[in-house]
Image (cartoon, rainbow, N blue to C red):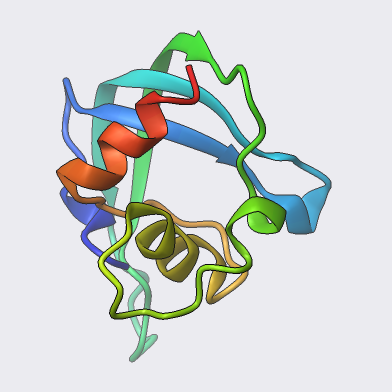
Length: 112
């Protein structure tokens, strides 16, 4: 979803702990050590692409950033990096890997 299946070795990632499962949003930054596509299961017509990643943590978030901080950013066409994150991460409450813009990555780097 949103380009997450294109994650590759060497990519920088930002890790969010699922607030639906008791996490607190943005928790860490890291580098992808390996990324492997998981094969689709035969006989199931509609499946979400799956990827298994191994990440080396390179930093811990210093400030909170989660659903609460992004909730007010709902004008999907305003071009703000926080709105992009709200849309991609919180519009559907499922665990996911998403690709983000350079502006959103720069925004997230401010939290480390």
